[in-house]
Amino acid sequence: MPARDIYHDAVKHALQKDGWTITHDPYRLKLSKGKNLFVDLGAERLLAAERGLEKIAIEVKSFRSASDMRDLEDAVGQFVLYDHLLTRYDPDRALYLAVPDAVRASIFEEEAGAVLIEDRVIRLFTFSPAQAVIVQWIPQTPS
Image (cartoon, rainbow, N blue to C red; front, side, top):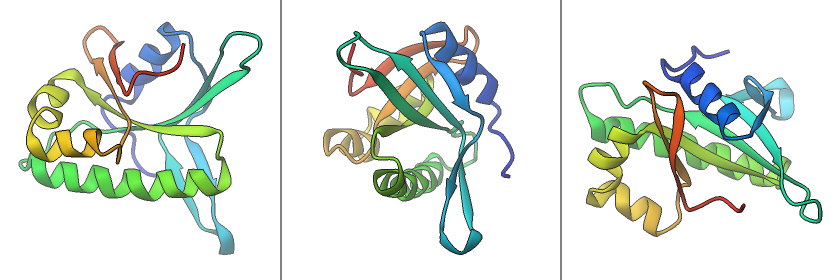
């Protein structure tokens, strides 16, 4: 299993505060020929009775290297791979990239990151690391 991101526990606690039940830590994608990939977290929450469960997987990224564009490239590549595999193996589960709110402001409001959101390449949620709370879902989650 890969090492956990420094914000793993903050994201986990933020999701729990927001009413999510952590179902997987990590969420394992079992591939053919015995290969595995690991998304950081799996979670679900009950929606209105007639709508059932909402299920998500979360990949946590801190964007702490010397190059924020390199971090973005790595995060998007991983997100796209996991998203396509989830679509195939667990189509009821939506993948989200979790980043600190400061990263949203510095990367995802600039052209390179904004295009990914506008073109619906990624789904994002931001959190406050200090308070372990979710700040924003992009796009907004159903409620």
